[in-house]
Amino acid sequence: MANYIHVPEEAPAVPKIDVTLDERDYRAGALRLIKELRPSWRPAEVNIKFFTDGITNKLMGCYVGGAMRDVVLVRIYGNRTELLVDRESEVKSFRTLHAHRCAPRLYCTFNNGLCYEFLQGAALEPEHIRTPPLSRLIARQLAKYHAIHAHNGWQPQSDLWLKMGSYFSLLPSHFEDPEKNRRLSADVPGRRQLGQELLWLQQSLSGLGSPVVLCHNDLLCKNIIYQQGSGEYTPPQGV
Image 1 (tube, rainbow, N blue to C red):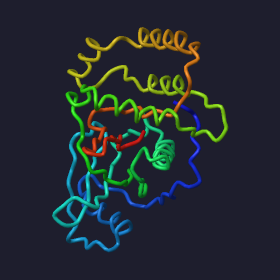
Image 2 (image 1 turned 30 degrees about the horizontal axis):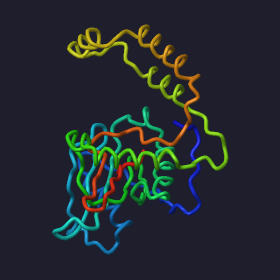
Image 3 (image 1 turned 180 degrees about the vertical axis):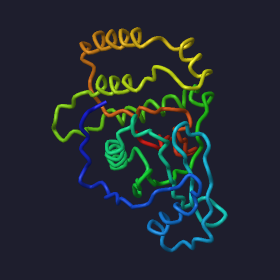
Image 4 (image 1 turned 135 degrees about the vertical axis):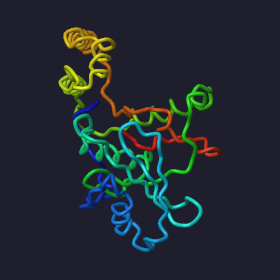
């Protein structure tokens, strides 16, 4: 995790659209975004497909016609996920990876999400990524990520321990729900133990001299898209 990302000058500009999608009426907000991104599309003809594999974010694809060819993906940030994800850095990473042909194009951001290009292909399952041909493709693509010089001549510094400390500060001490509170006490180590383990990790790993590189950081199977016949795979979210 580097603390600075330089976006290449050739990366397309990403507009910010002043729209907030309401969880109770996604379509109205999505159509306002589509009006800006695809002005030739008739609102009544816009189809919306929801993707259900996300853990924290909501994702839907907007398109016209019977086939999903030109699709605008609309990702709506999960509630309070800004506590975990630096949205400004996410956009910079997205644009940088796209400039190096390692991610889809980012069309725009809006008040509680972003829109980006849909990549045709199959989202992988655990049994797929275990196969040697695909595991080699994945390793090769990740090596491309790690080789990107995104720091404009600066010596990159890791912000791993700063991020870990920030996450640690968000740990709850209790829940109002009795069942959640019981599970917290029974299944999760105490803050003191976790703090000691975090300190041990920092002391053990900081002196290894491991290079600081641009990483994906969210390699869920469903985030890996395989384009059969192309011999390539692309992590669609790029961060």
